[in-house]
Length: 365
Image 1 (cartoon, rainbow, N blue to C red):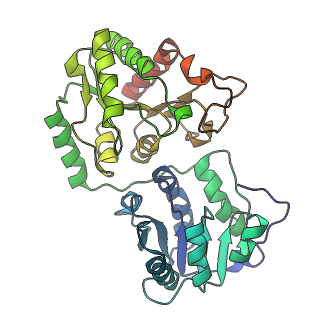
Image 2 (image 1 turned 90 degrees about the horizontal axis):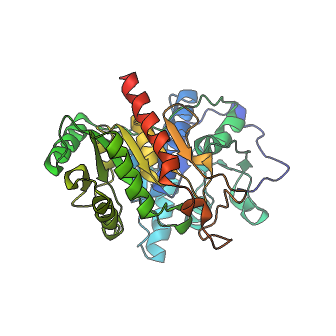
Image 3 (image 1 turned 45 degrees about the vertical axis):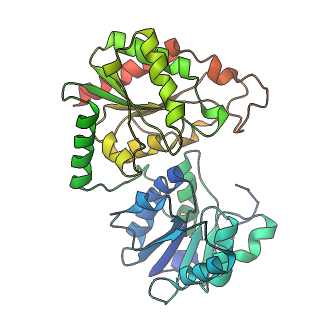
């Protein structure tokens, strides 16, 4: 995000909006991390209806959230004219009365189209570059380094709110939790097992710890803790990326029944429901780590090119990194071409952290 020298917040502190629209188009993890901001706004404006504009794939994150009034689901497959009609409906609000305030956390083209067609008197965002300024009436600085606090910074500075290190929130039903328990039982998880979920996939090369490293870590952890059982999670089209991990671990000697590959891709809300039955989540820097935070399950993330800004600054959530001078690079491909941050971070270095987190979790129960 840009950091210009001036902000435009005049008059915001006196506002009492009744209809607020938050724009977080993508990604799933970012929508999860928007929920502390939703909570802050609902606490500040308890009578306000807070709606969210996001992509259809992200919308399930907000189901059953009592602080969200309406979710506008963006279908990116719409044609241009149909999209314009949709953006106009969004700007008018579900009741046709429009919004008192729209807050944009991304400044993406589809959000800007909607802003052009909306008549909200306040259009707030983080400080925009010069070419985006016509779309906004106000802008406020972000905070950091934690990503959720960074988002919340816009409303913190605009309305004088205090960051209280609120965790993300996902609201599951008892039926969803029970369904996840039945699913795990059908997949081979027994009551005496200590379940660890593993997400070894990612769409960016600089975020993927090598599968042989994962395999050795799981094998060594099982040698220390024979009660451990590992469930491999994966996203759309990633089964064939996760399957080799099971094979590699078994070749090292991890019993087949101790490492489970989900036989199908889990639905979005099944992931946090499964995590409520999990002792620890282990993985790359992807959305399951944020789901773990949202349901109170500890998480350990192996970090490569990404920063620790995505790690919740509170107990139970940690990341481990090699600590090279080039970290974090933030790039999709290694600028140096060697990927040392991932290749040289050994399973032996991660194992003590994994075991310590498991012991700590068990001591709290």
